[in-house]
Image (cartoon, rainbow, N blue to C red; front, side, top):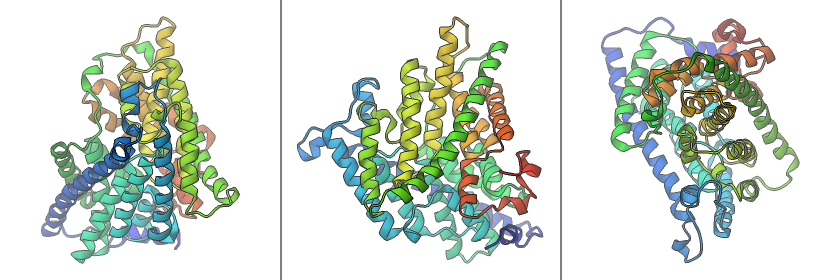
Length: 471
């Protein structure tokens, strides 16, 4: 299917649909989708808790095991090590992931956020319900196997699948179904981060790359409904707002700029290394694809044996970094190992998102810069701001979510103090990306499959985003 068909797909019925009952119906359906997406995000979180905690608890099998999720909490990040039982579970779960992917996934291959975006542009927003549920299940088992992946990408997949399924049942037209699918994606992001505004902007900025009122209203309704439901279900990722200061020293923007430049370089390296590693393992590791995740479990056990904090979600460690609770040397070690572990996870066939690992790496890099500045005797407002600046900058560089990354951090903390440091750091990320002519991971993945839907929708990336044509 050509890029032109992607343009036709989004512009189908380009004349604005009749406002009134039609838009009211879409708002009602979007609210339902928002509630569904938040509920599915909660189920995904519960499934991850089962695989990452209870099935690693050796007490269930009368052996010495410690929940993977709790290793760092119980033993301390710097002292934690994997137990033999953890390694066994990681290999077994890897085998399960390989079998599930081979027998349940389309084309016997993993699918992620870039595939959902592809569905929006080339398949009228149709994401299979079975596919979404399978992605969620495989991702939960992958995280239980210690894969360094995130839960937010699978949650978005589930939200889009639920919305697409509802649209199919109600026999909505193509434009309505596409809009509802985007509403499901926004709802999942909103529920995961309690950031409805960032979720709406993410869909418009990263997925659609165009603004239309009749799409914006239902997407916003879904995001708000999901956010409120997430509060009731306790789904969202939390950053304590009390640790954010009320001021920033003007000279500190030099250091926030350095964070942005470093995150830009790190994001480019990550965006290029991940697809290259996937291709390399696929070509050079000559074993059955069903067995590759099991081998990947062993590889991950080797990477994270003495630093299991780099395995799994890493939410606790990210929050600890934002609180300034990790030493400089450990920050750098965790950053390097997380980078390698995340790439290895995808290369060996595990499934999940890159949002969580991006937040982790950004927090560690930002905190490391803050600790070095503080160690040099410079007075700083708060180490937390440095970690948050790194988080926003890394997400912007990896996912391509510029404005939504900034707004997400502000919504998650509830403090406007974060806005200027984030804005400057993200700007510096895109200075690096612009000068090097690189692109986000999502763009790399889509172009790697011969898909670049945005060139025809908005001319070229250079015309629309200011990034070189090569993006």
